[in-house]
Length: 168
Image (tube, rainbow, N blue to C red):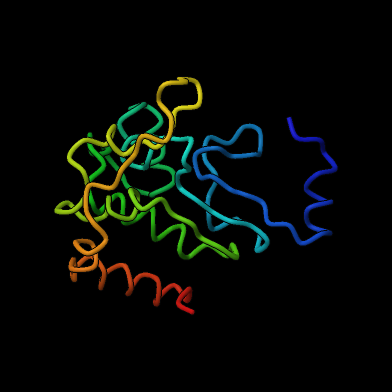
């Protein structure tokens, strides 16, 4: 556990906190809502040590269902797979956060587009800290040149960044 004094010290020193949507710091909460992030923070849906958005979506159906209904405010059954529109909604939640920074794994961004994302979410995982032989294995399946040529994806992502006010 983090000592109780740490958040105050970080705030006083202007050090950003890290807020992960599925790892809330407040006891009793299942998820952290990026809309409630402090300004002096970084929000992320995933990190190098967690599964990607798509991988997480398939890990625990009960949690996924609660997230779909409670955090995304959709009625009914959650899609079994993390469809591109679901992935987009999660990215957009983070872009519109009041946090100073919204940071994303490239895999989570590519998950918004059914044409360019990997077929299997398990292949997107970077690191599993508990498994010593599974470390930093991820390699992007597209070259940067190929990604730059994905005009639809790049224009859509650009529009989300601009409309959220995060474009420099």
